[in-house]
Each structure stands twice: as structure tokens, then as C-alpha cells.
Image (tube, rainbow, N blue to C red; front, top):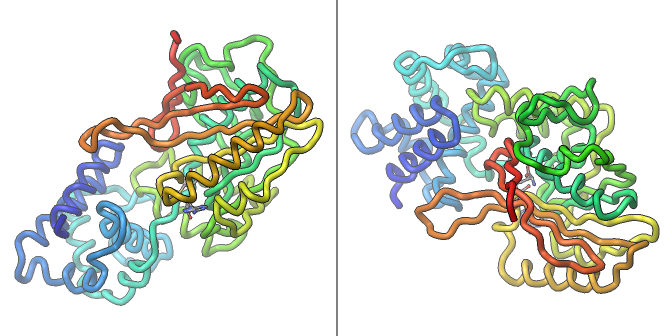
Length: 357
Ligand SMILES: C[S@@+](CC[C@H](N)C(=O)[O-])C[C@H]1O[C@@H](n2cnc3c(N)ncnc32)[C@H](O)[C@@H]1O
């Protein structure tokens, strides 16, 4: 895929995923690259040398994130007026003029973040995690040890401290939480069970090959910059979770998924939950196989008094043309039968719990 096509593909994806601003902005970058000459020149200059950034359309999100970071740092001048994340309003003509002016005038600043992969921590995915924990609570009353691989900033380790509002308008969890997920759950999920008990999390362990330290300004800036500027719900969720994290900072160790699985053991009187969301595709085949083999081993050693669960929210699609669906799948031992629980959107909400088998 050439650069123009990559920007166009990412623009279309942003449109489908609810960011009209990036759909417009990135399509305009694609047009400029396609036009060539003076129109393409500022973009070709900043993107030079990064054309092979990994991941489909990876460079488009790197450029967008790098510019957004300059806006958040108040280093983008007139462009800030068009960014909803800092109180502005996207307006295509003026926004595009300010964007191209920044890229043309500050190429070095714009290039600063092009060599790093986008790094997000999607707080909305906690809706799936908590739904999974509620389902688990129907099978075992044991307190939960939460162990996450690919945690990023570890914000989803605080999932039980968020407020969830289901499709009937009923709220669940801490009413005073700074994180409120409206329309988090739809369908006849475990939250509709009058006997459902809120998960009791006794241990939280975050791990990642590239952890983000949310206790630092740089860490918070990283996570904020890659949230699309016109997606105010995502920004609010992130802000709320960062506020909670400031009181109870999640610990995220620098470890590969394989290392975590290898070092994991079960503890009497608890259910150990190995959880991950939207990270499996980053593991190569041999690491995936090793993690799954260790999951089987741990499962085989589990008892009702020392239980183990593998809970995942990962994208699936049957053909490369199809959009991803995000499946919440639970296995619990003793037993270990895989159970498809629900589907969610890429950014987490809503979690749709099917009514039939
Ligand atoms: C798309 S982010 C998802 C983060 C978080 N789970 C969420 O849902 O918001 C994927 C994360 O996986 C991490 N990652 C990539 N390869 C990994 C590996 N081999 N072991 C552990 N984490 C890895 C990345 O550093 C990144 O933080």
C-alpha cells in the first residue's frame, strides 16, 4: 500500500469508528499526497524515512498522534482552536489550513513522535472485563487476582472501581466513580441477575513490553494524544481513569506475555484471572502458543478452592475485508470449557450480551 492509500484507508477506518474529524483530516492528507508537487511537499518532507512504519496505515496514526500531542502541549498555535479535546471545534477549511501550516512550519516538532508506535489504553474495554468478572462470580465466590498482559498504562486493572450504566439505565458499581460508562451493557448479561455480586479484586498485576507510567506527565500525554480529538466520551473516560490512577496508581511491570505466563502460579482461596484486551495480535505465533500451553498447565492444576480463569477481549474477523468484531471469551478451571460471552466495539462499549446460546 502506498502512502496515499494508507492515509485513505485510515481515514475510512476513523469514519467507521466514529471520528468524522480524522476521517476528514486524513483524507485531506491523502489528497495532498496524491496531488503531488507543492501540495504534497510539506507532508512528504515530514514523513520521509518513516514510510515503512509497521501496521496497516500505522504512519497516519503516528502523524495524527504527534500533531495532537503538540496541540495538547499548547505548541500548535492556531490549530488548537479546531481540536475538541482542548475545547475547540473542528471546521474543515480552517482546520485543514491550520494543520498544513503547522506541518509546513514546524516539521521537526511534528517528526518528534513519528518513530514511536501509537500507544493507547482503552478504558471502555473495562465494560467487557467487568461483565466477564460478573459472569465468573456466578460460578465461584472466590476473590479475584487480576493479572493482565499488554496492560499499557494499567487503567483497566481499575475496572471494578468504575460506574457502568446498562441499556435499561440502571447503574452498577461505584456511583461516585470519576469513570462513568453510559450504555456499557446491553442484553441479558450477568448484571441483570438480582443475585449478582460485585467482583472483589484482591490483587492487580499489570504487565507490558512497553508500559506507560500514568503517574508521569509524559505517560498521561502519550495516552491522551492517541485518543482521537473529537471522541469526547473516550477522553472523559480516560480523564476519569487517570484521576483514579492518581489515587491508586496501577503497577505495570515491563514483561512479555510469555514471561508473565511462565511466572504465573495459582493461590489458594482465590481465582486467578489472566486477562487481555486487543494485544494478542502483537504476539508472534510461538509466543501465543507458549502462553496458551501455560494456560492449559495452570488450568490442569486448578481446583475449586484455587481456581483459574482466562478472560480475553480480542478482535476476530472471517475475511480481511470484514470489520473486526471484539469477542469476550471466558475459560474457567476446573473444567476450562471455552465460552463465548459477548461482543463489543473496538473502543469497548457497548458490550452486547446475546440472548440465546
Ligand atoms: C493496543 S494496546 C492495548 C492495551 C490495553 N490492553 C487496552 O486494551 O487498552 C496493545 C498493548 O500490547 C503491548 N504488547 C505488545 N506486544 C506484547 C508482548 N509480546 N507482551 C506483552 N505486551 C505486549 C503493547 O505494548 C501495548 O501496550
